[in-house]
Image (cartoon, rainbow, N blue to C red; front, side, top):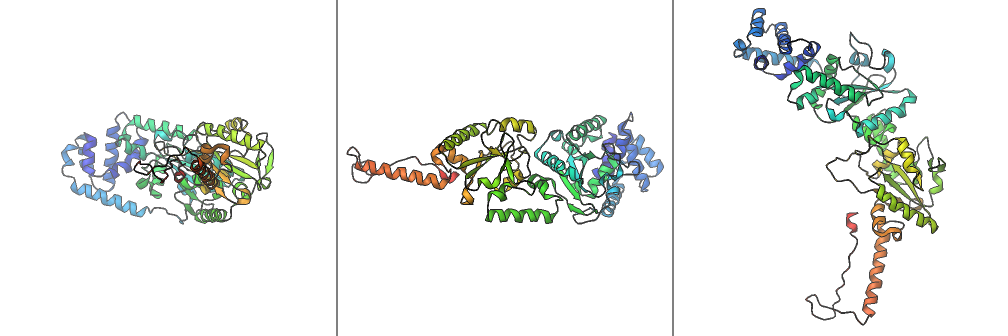
Length: 484
């Protein structure tokens, strides 16, 4: 009853939200509702909206004044609006002081790290994750960020700070965050999510600072959604990107430091590769000019230039049946001395496999295959997914896309994105597994069959109405290439 009266008195959940921090710090009280009521009255006293006597009367009998509170309610809204105006939202291009943002008067360290100089001279990504149980597992965004973090760790130039946005799940559950048991539930969610991360975090107990960061970056308006938000600040304090999580999932570590300029540069490089494709531009990286065999041998990329090369986007379990079809075709073409090679693109960041793929499983799978592969979790994977429009994220309610087999002709003569469909329908006869080849193949079959029928004395000609005549009706089932 006191909570309802309090809400009617103040008339805005923003006040309760702003005081939630104080409540959490005192939630061990035997009477949490009384504690929150006391905190709200302290807020009202501080702005001369309730005198001491009126406040005490409210605590003991809130219903006695809640119906006379229009003036108080309006004044509370004015105060909060003025505070929001004073606390300007940080935007891309602003200069910030990370020490002031991430540390407080009572705390100068982060979880796992006691050195306040940990972030000095580094690009820092603040990783805001909504407080929801479904983030207590690795999703594609987190897997991609972990890969980037591990790629850049030897360079000592990048750090990630996890910040739990604990108002997100509260709103989903009808605002029940004011109960101690729900506070303890949030603590468990924080620990479960953080256990998946190799980087540092702002302590869950520092509620003041976490809510301050939400407001400074405007996340109290947008972070009730179901996805993480990444905000990047460079070593000089400039905010480079305020929505980086998806960029990391699409571009990976080559996009570091994740500025607009670097993302634009990668897009322009993609355009150049599209206009002038080559195996080197597709498969190589500044650190690597080879691919590997299942025995660990390094095979130079330039040795494949005169071959038909199939880029096989592979997802464990889901792609197994097609892999067996491809293996049969590969071995038969090898016996016939065809210049054909397959390069395995082992996917680890898909919706279905981001939790259960590791290098050991990659090696076990690769040993069963006779062809070559890109190294495990090589950053080039993401470039190939961008260039050939392989789904970055597939929603579980949507149907899965067919296995991807992109055929690259000798010296870039042609690129066929529908190699899997051609191979599945035509087998080895479809080599080099292009739609153009199978159209010619089927056309030739139709012409030969028509000539054979025309020359046969048993051929019956019929008109469309069914009567005998000279109009030849020939029906044949064609491959539906339009869907490829």
